[in-house]
Length: 346
Image (cartoon, rainbow, N blue to C red):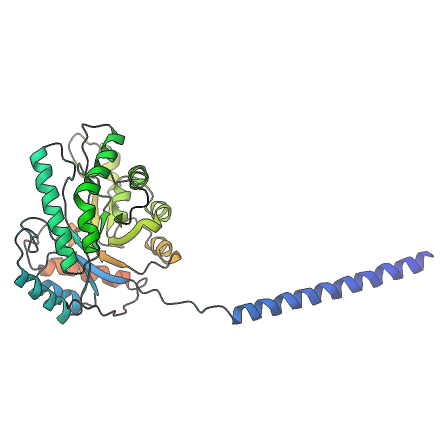
């Protein structure tokens, strides 16, 4: 073969290869177009947006008029919804108010140390909590937000084992009867082991595949513990059944001057309404959307700049209401306002 013939052969081969590549690319593009034509269109994200607070008809009406579709109701001892004292007549009245304003309730909120070292105190908490589970069942409320329990006099694993034992013996029979799940809010206090991934992992391992426990996730508590709320939510996303919307602002000048345990007890952090602290809410909601979370997300108003310390109640004060209103304005860019009716009738 001459040099000229060789060059012509190579040129012809290159032309064929280019044509083949274009044909392959065209086929791939056609395949993608055909695949796209058969994909499900993206669905609008439709979680319920709500508020957390004490039950009164006025508070329910406020939530409704401001466009909220969910509430978390405080239900501990001596609250306006105390399971120890609420009567059947009052329960029926409450159902009527919720029905009138088409208001869903995702959870009752109750504090308490379920494995308190003081036996009398523990019995009181356990008894109150069983009554609250039964109240939730009567109201068709699926969750109760609380702390896990804690006894710092015991080794960590022994505390986990004791929590598992108490729940199985004291709470789960009532949960089964009333179709209620217990959710841990990661509030870092003396009554809670479920404050971090370390606590979550140990507890979920202890409870195995129990259908009666999960998380009521509040990203603000991760911030004040210097943990990443986004990574934590992503790691435990399939255990999150209810959400508190609250932010945390770190007061860096105070922190740098005194450290995390300042000798003058200066407060180096404070809770804020969403958007006024350091949480990246776009990323947080992206994590929830990634698994199609469609439950409730309720603003927990503890912002001192919006009357959190000046709300004697039980009705929300005007200053306190403004915190909910301003938070909702910020959240509107992420959370659509879509009504979803709920039936509380028997």
